[in-house]
Length: 594
Image (tube, rainbow, N blue to C red; front, top):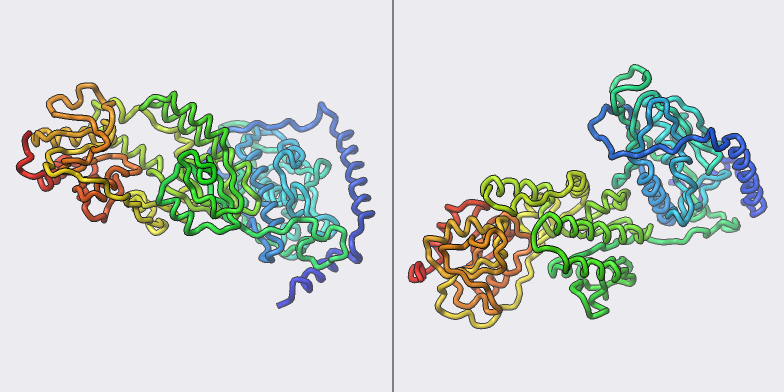
């Protein structure tokens, strides 16, 4: 096999590069470029410039006109990683701006009119750019991959090509060799095409590919070519000259122009779980980055006790934490307004993280609360990622609440909130693309199947003496339908036990009429016969874990996620008959009446 130096030597000869590039040549190139930009400005006066097209939510069920796919990473040379990662970052930014663009019949699409100049302050970074036979580091480098894909899709969709420029160099196997390429250079080398029918662009990055889709929308407008259903066009990885990082021309003034960096993992976390914290402590590497709401470990304040000492770089958001804390204190205990506010806070934190991710972060580990927002923002495109699962997927959560609401239609809490369908779709798609779901929760792990990484629940230290009377039943939750309050009331009424409640009654003031109830205290486990939680939804069963540590029998639904744990009797969710039988099996006969 030829060495990298030999391959690049052949490629340089193929490009016609006879000598080492000089600063004079580079300056001359830039001078010519500005002349061409002036010429473009004169040729396109303000009144005749293409209009910027509007965007709408992407339609996924409209007729497919074209689909183009191309690989994101095309070089295995280690020194090339950072420029390829920069290219992928530039594609992420461009995809956010082009995704959802609607082109009306007869409408003109202009690449640069839609994207504007790629500059640092717009977020663009150094990527790979082919210039005069060399692949150099350039701000916005790599956007030609997108223009190639757009041109390829536009041809397939039957659009009229108004302006297109081929690359000056063609390599065997590349899009240029097939005549399906379109080079761009701000702003005088543009790609422009006219749609024959109303259509919409969808631009996205999967883990490994850039995808460009054109779908027909609406009913009217224009005549299109008669064609069969569009076949996906897959752009193969092209043999291309490596960049300044690996070309071996050490005498070139551009040599070493881009910073070297290795691929790293970034941990984007939110609410602290001891199980997830232990996982981070075991898996994190010193070069990884940690994004946490607050570095509580080093500051000594706040609930975010993530092991930041494991990381060289820690980024946090104290101002967002302060805003979240202030808003949280004003929220109601239950209701749609509360849930909407919490989701808005999650979105703000996800946005803060995504704008600060290093280009070299090719692998992410993400708290589930941030996942749908990171997916919608495009931050997960071109990256592998795992999810720290802290609740059921929203689609499953909604389906579970709907079943509970049908079972107990008198509940005023089971139907009071459902998240936006677009948010559900974003989370579902992101979870399907994730490598692993990391969780101690057996119910959530079961949904993940082979992709689940099941952690052990963190069992707390046992509390003090629990008493000997064992004459009370503990319901360790707020009285809500989703916590199984209706099932417990129906199953336990005939027992006549003293019932200790773990929180306020939010269903109805008279919910527990006919039963003897008290509210829990610090010694809530004293004299307890059993702790019962027949919940429909339970993400974090901490009080059940306390009871397990104290050796007290636990009756829990499948939704509590404790399958297989000693001392726990699991009953089917929503099954009042099975719950009644379980209560009779653990409650001493002498305690049947008080």
